[in-house]
Length: 191
Picture 1 (cartoon, helix red, strand yellow):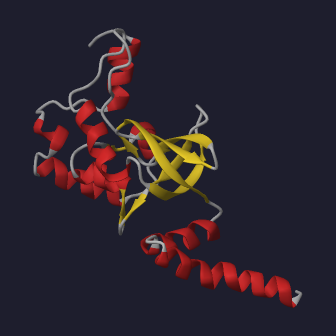
Picture 2 (tube, rainbow, N blue to C red):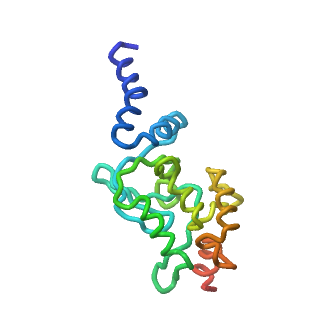
Picture 3 (cartoon, rainbow, N blue to C red):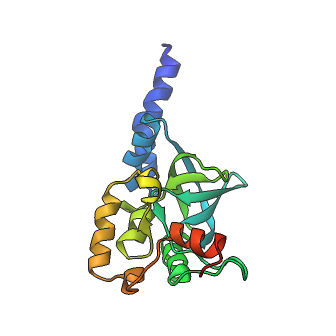
């Protein structure tokens, strides 16, 4: 390895966290190193839209990316007269917006889903927006398909605590999971 390449690698791995810390992104530095080491990727930019409680748009280098928050599923918002929203759908969207709307953030991403959305965790302070949504009863830990979409196992415990405390959507005695809502209400028209 040439000295110039070695210096560049040192800069990336040791100076980048210092720069991130100075820019207010210090809590994200260890997450970024971890993501890069495990083959994940990052997207850094400004959150320009919060569509619902688990979907945002981020502007990265003048290109908009649609983001699906990993490991969670939030109550559906209305999508026209044939696709009514769920209770707490709009509240969930507003709750997520409080943490991310208009902010410049670095997302930890895992893959693109079947709709072309980047599936990501959104670090916020020393936690993630994903966890905050579940912790406050604004989303479910996504256990659809036997949990195949659940990367963050801590979400199961956060959901359990929110449910016990009847926070957010858990104030509803018969809260319907979004994956059930999409099937029964949107596909079968049995709302």
